Length: 140
Image (tube, rainbow, N blue to C red):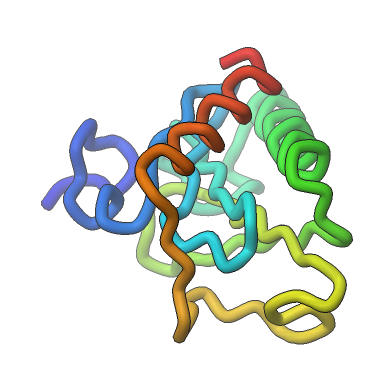
């Protein structure tokens, strides 16, 4: 296995998420587990683990990508709150999880757990609709 985010077809990544598209500094992916409707991850295209390793323009572009992607999720699926988090001690790509939370819904008001004990999987058509909506909203 090569790089989780760089490999065009990485078995581990494809098992848990779909590629939505490339943005300025990052690539957006949609998680297959949709217990948090609209949950995505934005991964930096470059092999850097920390934001402090990025040049100022890369920081600005990645922050803009994150704001645009999380804003699209909020606008498309109307979540109450967006939780943003960076995980991945061993992954060579800085990445932020975009976790929409819905008042009265799964984990609202509680801690986010990266692995959901009761994942919510959609049909292929439903995933494709979500991906198309994100692409249209973001122009990617």
